[in-house]
Amino acid sequence: MNIKKTEENGSKDQSNDSASDDVIQLVDRLFKSVASEINMPKDITLLLANLHTPYLKIAKETPNLFAIENHQARVFLSKAIKISKTWNQEYDTNNSYIKKLESVINNIVNLKNYESTVFIKAELDLEKQISRIQKRHDIKLKREKEKSLGQEKILKAKHLTKNTLIEKMTGKKIPVFAKELLLSEWFNVLVLLNLRFSLKSKEYVDKLNFVDYLIEYSQLNTETVISEDEIYNLAREYKSGLLLVAFNPIDCENKHNDFIKNLINNQNTITKLKNESQNTQKTVTDTQSSTQTIKKVIEPSPVDQVAQKKQEKIVVEPLKPDAMIPNKKEKQDNPVDRKLESAKIQPEEVLDISQYKKKTEKSSPQINKELINLDSNIEITEKEQTDIDYNEIMSSITIGTWFEFTSHKTPIKAKLSWISPISEKYLFVDSNGIKLTDKTKSDLMTGLKNESIKILHKFI
Image 1 (cartoon, helix red, strand yellow):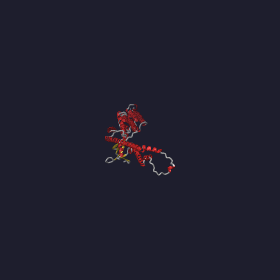
Image 2 (spheres, rainbow, N blue to C red):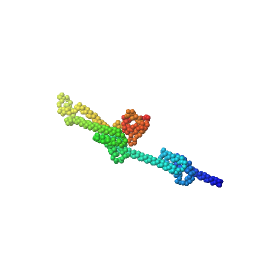
Image 3 (tube, rainbow, N blue to C red):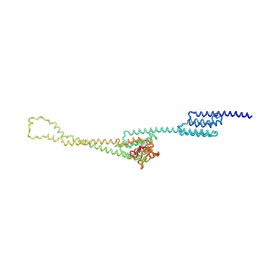
């Protein structure tokens, strides 16, 4: 009996060993196939390889593991492989999925006994993590697309605004202050309203009409007179536009006052030109009158004309022999000769007239010169040329340039950190990146002109 039992136990051990060998081979094949996955990232393949030992243990406890399709250990491994194939490191720059997968696998490795709930939870955790990564990526793509569309819309609005301003300003003689205002500050106002509202909206049309009014009010036209009420109304519209593009109240108030001052000075210039024009016109009239007077003086009088005609009729005949004999008698008084003698213009009179004529001719070029100067006052002045040079300097300024601001009690040095594409404000920071101040393009240009702001060519 004992021998028979020993033989039976030996046959069972042999069959168990054979079954165990089969399980080991199946598990080995399973993880070799996982390692050979083409689309699987290498880091994930190495992590999944850590499941080899736990799955071998489960397979020994459950001989028919590979026959049960819905076994949670098999379901989890299939899902982990499938999810891992969809993972992309470009979407998950901080490798959050790798970290989650590592945590899940460690939980399975540390299991003493198989628990289906652990595998179910592990599967759900991986699905949630990959879903969050995908959502973040979708949001990123959406924002990039919106940013691209927004930039395209901004460029289109800027292009339209620029063409509109150029069209309105072409052929007009506009002062420098008005030209700079329209092409910088008001350009940003129109671009912003174009993006916020339609081109036919009241908000946009009102600010566009400001351009026409400013051009009209700033024209050096002696026939147009602008009242102070009209200037102050336009200044209020200007201030309301500045508040739309993030100017602080103090800057707005200062620019508002400067705007009024510039328009009033422009009107004073128009008045001065009008007075000069009237004086020049009066000088021209007086000159024409003097020329007519000289002409009357030079023309011979009716008596002189008669004497001249009579002198032309006198015929000189050949002398007779008798006439060659000297006559001792006094020459007879001839009334015609006496009249001719009295009608002659004396050399002194001719000299006086010629001198007066020369004097008049000398005065005429001066009058023409004044007329030319009156028109040339409207052309670009030396100050405007200087402003054009400063515009070139402004366009050459790049981010990272250091400046010195001397308007403070103690001069400060700051670096240009950022230029706003909408308001064109210049942001300045210290060496630690902390904001010190910001300036508009106009303020920065003014500071460079009066040397309260200096460009440092040596970096600190």
